[in-house]
Length: 250
Length: 299
Image 1 (cartoon, rainbow over the protein chains, first blue to last red):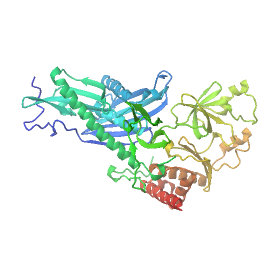
Image 2: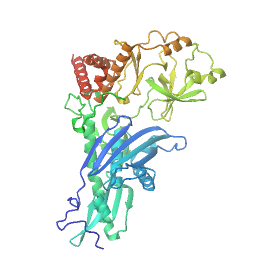
Image 3: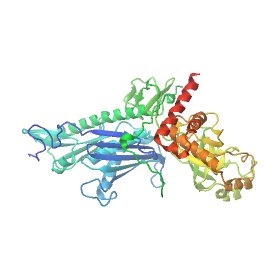
């Protein structure tokens, strides 16, 4: 099953990365003042803004005594893709993404702590260059941490694809738009890397069972790498916002 | 709309950090193991899993004997009995008001826990119930005290003191609740002719000096007060206090009457109030205030 040619003879990908390399991740927490938490994250050329409101009193129709209701809205700016989008939100794809986002975040949030409350997560894709869902999950995690909402662990998402190099299968991590468009299979994983739990798994095409494990483990490795980067960013953000007086000893 | 607009490049942004010490506390992030043993008690911001105590928020550890808590940099307001809060009426219901206090559930103000105009502790009649909207309606701001906590974490408020009640003329500033220092007194009359209520929930109310309004209880007086116009100098002083608070918040400094007053004094060197919104000026004020506070602490 020789797929499209995603690796050069030197073993480099179309954008010059090695198969196990992520795109550059840059992020900033607390970009807005109005929401309880917010974050900006870019992974290569995919750029996402996330804002979190809550936990606050749930609307009566949604209220649940079991735990907090997580309400997500995924939206893509009209200028985010090569071809101008007409509906930034509310179309089938955005609705599906919102549901998936909710699934990943509900797995991470300690929902049982806040009965009758609701957390609203709004993500806006400013530029889509592949892996928009993954970047949204990572940005939403940062925004939740910024809002001080209790999480079990970081929720990270990463995608992986499959290519052939010298007759050997070679999984690719963090798939970009060009590689997505080339038609290979894309496996998207949202997980809590520190607990090794998988919150969401999605595959775009069919993939032979024999190769599934290598692709999955490469995606999981990507999640772990992303967690390290996010953790570093969170610590830097904390260090910035800390003044001497804040350290209260009882 | 015309006016002076300045938009800066991201690279020219001012770093608002005024931290003087290089020593940083140990930070914990979600999912990180705090301790492996079961000798400790699980407090806020932590959870137990696989025989380990893990952190669930990003922040610093606070330890009281065996109780371990992790306190995040910012979060929603967590109420404690006796806190002074400023809130906004959301809804008028049967014998109670719903109040928004930046808490994670709406707070409740019972009709039985307010001082009705006319004074004295008298029975609440059906008439009072019908008059509720006359007294406080949706959108009104109040200052109140936390009377008790319900089991689900929502707050019950009371205004049974002359210092609490409806707020009429002034400005509301919203900040993170974690920036408010707990003090004995949260009502301050600043020397600059402005009175402020520093709500524990992060809502700060700035108003012109209330002379003896609260003492006189008759309803006419309050109505009079509402329609009184505030002089320009008072307005400027209020705006200045507000901008000073914003400057301190941008640098994440703790707020109490001293820090606000220091910032106000430092701000006087800027003639125009709107100059205080300039990022450099904000940093300058925050830095000088921090310096002044450090001096006092050292003495």
